[in-house]
Image (cartoon, rainbow, N blue to C red; front, side, top):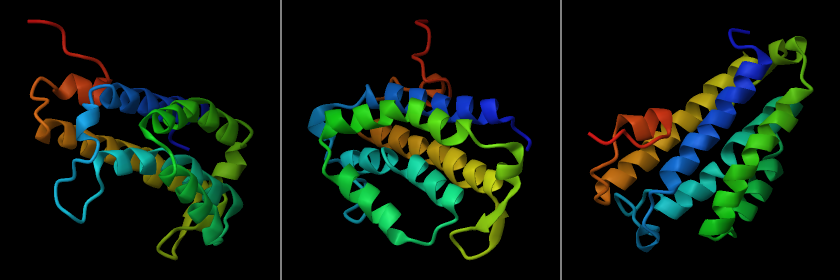
Length: 167
């Protein structure tokens, strides 16, 4: 693997940290904001993020095609309010360590079914779909925040998960 297991876990945990930082900037009055009628609302996006990563890792670990894994996680996520959603996201720090901690290098190299039907190594799937997906979806949340008037947010918020130093 290009990343060590501990680096992968740390990277996913950092995604959680940055996402929670961005979520702390949400005005609760704008949880229903959606850029267009068919896009997720802010709350729906967060609910999705509260289950996406761990659920995809479960698929990758089991190489399952059982959609019940997804629909069960999605149903639980959709039942959460804002605070419960943030708590579920915060819990992912430990969830990622638990899901990945016991895996060996050989486990990451096992070929599994990708969502498009192709074969891919388990490690590549976790990095390409989960880790990259986390970065993409947090960018979407950042753009929602900007569209809702949070003009003070910038690069430091999006990529470092911190407020920029005062000028």
